[in-house]
Every structure is written in C-alpha cells, then in structure tokens.
Length: 354
Ligand code: SF4
Image 1 (cartoon, protein in one colour):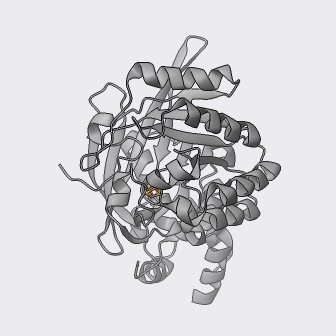
Image 2 (image 1 turned 45 degrees about the vertical axis):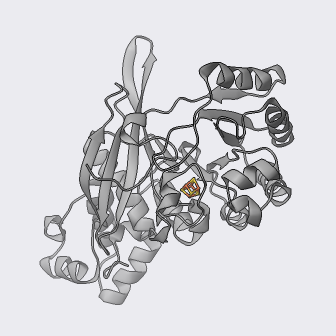
Image 3 (image 1 turned 60 degrees about the horizontal axis):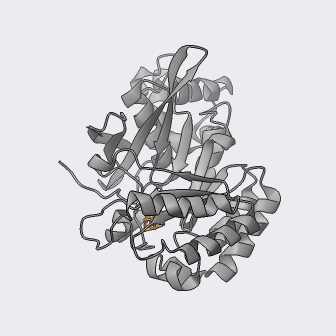
C-alpha cells in the first residue's frame, strides 16, 4: 500500500486531527490545504504558495497527493466518445482501468454533455462472474479511498469537465471493500470537497449480502444496481459463483430491506447470454423478482469476451425477451454497450495495454 497516505483520502476532520498532531497551525490552514487539493488540484506541495515553506515541507514528508498516474487513454471508434484509461497506482505499481462515458443532452436548443465515469474499486476481483474479464485476473488487492477518488480527478483532467455521474462498475466488487468504499463516498459527497450528490452515484454489486447491509447502514443515499443475470438459483449459480454463497433466498430479502430505506428504485442488471439465461421461463421469474422489489430491469446483450465461450442472442430474441417483460408491465431498458471495440463495456475491463 501507499507509503505516505494521500490527502485525497482524508476527511476534513481527519486532516484537522493530523495537522494538530504535526504542529501548532492556525485552523485556516486546513481550509487552504483543502482548497489546493480539491479545488485547485495541485500536483506538488510546492504549488501551495499561500502556505509557509515549513508547512509545505511537513506536508510533503507525511503525505502524498495523487495516488495514481494515467498511462494510456483509448478512445472508442464507435463515435460514442467513450474513453477507457489505464492508471498505474503510485503505492505499488498495480494497474487499474476506468471508463469515461459521455452522453449528449439537448435542452431548449442548447447542447451539452453529461459525463458518466465508471471506476474500479479493487485490483482484479475474487468473485469470478463467468461473463467478466475482470474476474479472469483473480483478486490482487482492495483500492484505498484515495485511489477511488484519484480516478475521478484523472477523468476530470482528461475531459476538462466535471464528472456528473459516478458508477462503481469497473474492476472489483465494491461491497467487498466497504472499509474503503464508504469513506470514499463520504469524501465524494462532502459539499466542501468533491460535492457530487449521492443520487448521482450508483454502486453495482454482484449480490454481496453483508456489504449491502453495511452500505444501507452508512446512510448515504446512493443508487443500487444488482447484477442478477439469472432469475433462478440453478441458472444464476452457473453464471455467478457468488450465488452459491449468497443465494436468491438470502439476496432478495436483503434487497427488500434496502428498498424499505432507499428513495431510489433498484436496477436489476441482466446480461442476455444465448442458450443460458434467455428463455422466456427465466423472463417470467425475472418479472416476479422485479415486481417483488419494485425494480427496473436493464437488459444487456452479452459482449464477447476473448477466452470465454458464450455468445450474444440474436437481436430478435433480445427484443422478444424484452417484450415479454414489458407485457408483464415491468419497467425495462435494453442497453447496447458503448465502447465495445475498446473492451470498455460492462464485464470487459481487463488490464490490457496496446
Ligand atoms: S462482474 Fe464485478 S463482481 Fe463479478 S467478477 Fe466482474 S468485477 Fe467481479
């Protein structure tokens, strides 16, 4: 892990406590430091020009600033402007990936873009979902809170724009890293720091039941997306080994608890895989689950992953599956992934350099 902790990982209170341990500094120094780190985004302590040289040097000897360095940026050729970037972590040189997904919005003749950023929460992943390239790597380690936030800083530097929406849907199962995820969410949503509203943050989970409970208890009103991908234990366990640990019998009540306390409806992610989970009997079971949770369903035709045997159903079959849910009055969208050509789509993040 990082030898010196990054200032990106400290709350206002933690910074105040550390400063008082390090010397007798006036309280306004904390606000100045926060301004340099979170607003001006300096890359060197020497750039904090309104701090006395002695304080700059104390900070430099106890803390670091940026926990990662962008190594490569790949632009999708599909015209979607989706960009995947590969970063090297300062602490130990491990590599992670993040994806910038712009969406054009037009209102009253004006045209602008919203930036969604998909970030990683771990290096590799232990959960081994069978459709997922990240799972092929195995688990390496958890990301720190600062390493999660560093991906947002990097994306805003690359685009020159603020990130409008954040999804924890890159490498890793965020709910198996709640120790660092929850503090990161506090920093990201703090209006004096990053100030991104919790309703613009989505945590995507494979169905980590204890993590769901902890996330619910922390009281930050984020959105939740659940990778369901199978509507019966028999099918889901073949696609997602996590289902053998926390079956639908445990997962669905945990999600009902979540719904009881959340203002937002859950999204059930369902990758359509030919001959595996795309039968109409699975669609019926999926409808029943969606109705029970008052959830919406997001269908994602499978993306080919090199080294994995599955394939995408025909377009007609995907449409029929979708219609079957609609006929049962389930809110459903079908998402064809952006960035398929640069392996930046869901389940495709895998460390690969050009
Ligand atoms: S889908 Fe998520 S939880 Fe499953 S293996 Fe991939 S990164 Fe891990």
